[in-house]
Length: 573
Image: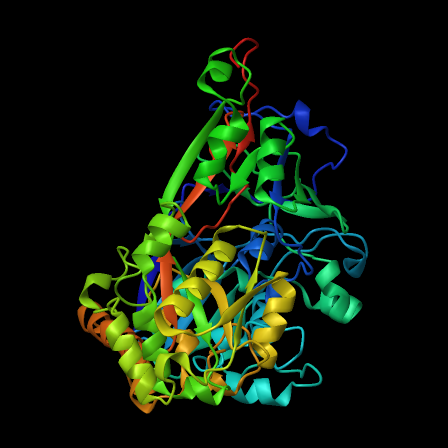
């Protein structure tokens, strides 16, 4: 018997065929106070190298690919509830091991050379192809860890497709009709519908991969609200998809914007200056100590010299941590890892090093949110005496004989993570006699160092791919320790008890029991000192007041399909 879930959304959908691309977006009329036209502008501190969802493993990339590609399901504005997308509804078998997706009709791919210069309707075959690719062992696919242990036949397909894609795909992913797909799971997984909101499963056609092969990362063909216009070293430009399938609650066809312009910034100060000079509309990850200086004084604001703006803050479902690689024999010793955990004063890092930005992690690895009661996990206390005793037991009294370490960190100079790394190095020296230097490198190089094992210590962050604490625990699963990955178990942690708990977690259907197992998993991570959790923070954005209907959530997703631009009346700034 199937349990039916009908997803309710504010989006009204009508059949969309081919519309006239020559129509000026500015001439379109909207009701309900919205307005068509205009370009939304923002910056990224990290360069985006790929535009295919299968490789969109960072927030920087996902914030662009999610505008080009539609996921199977999506999250609402709160980031908590599953709503329709490519699948307009789904049903689950009584044993929780089979999901049937009802694919939306009238959704069209962007016109592209691989489709003879035209678009075509998306069908169940495209959903299966995308999911098959997401399970494959091909080099272009970096998201296989999401499905391979869950979907029937996915692991076998992954092993069989290391060199080339094979016809037939994954046995547990079946096309039941032009608009119906069934996914069979090895075990019931209570959060599978949330997992299907993952942006890495953005739907794309087989023709695109056959035509462009590995270069498909530079030729994105999706069904999303925006299409690629320009992809260069300077940035990315997207233009409005005139055939997008979604409408808002007033019946206006989305999106409202004519385009999106992403450029790159070398540091946060230049980004804030660009905002002040109205060159961009959005600032992400605001350093609070810089805002007043860059945006001007109260007197300037009263004189209308500053940008009229709004600041939005949401608790982020993310954690910043110091990673330790157990490829290095030193970090195989749990006493060393525990010593470092007890030697770090997280409150001082937040209050002094970061000057009050963020919150010290005093419990486990999973942040405290509506999805998880972090207060049930007992974190490591700051105890220098205990830290030194553990380090001496491991053979390094007062840090003697401990090799000089390098802490690798990416980002801009004196950005939060860089300051954290320097603060950690200072505390390790003062509290344990351990010498650590800090090396600031770009994001790609840091990931390469972690993946190759060159990095023994590194500062990084993890944000949930979907709203479930399991998304944090998955990166510690022992099975992933054999992967050459900078994301999935780069610590090379293997523990039979944790793995058993993790498997039980994925099978458990009762929400209360599932939370209990999740707490036990997180406590095991703390007790084994696998990583050093450092800080949680808020997702703070500053946006020009001309941008309307802009919303954020705890997963730090950005959806530009509903926002519109309304210039303030003269004299209001």
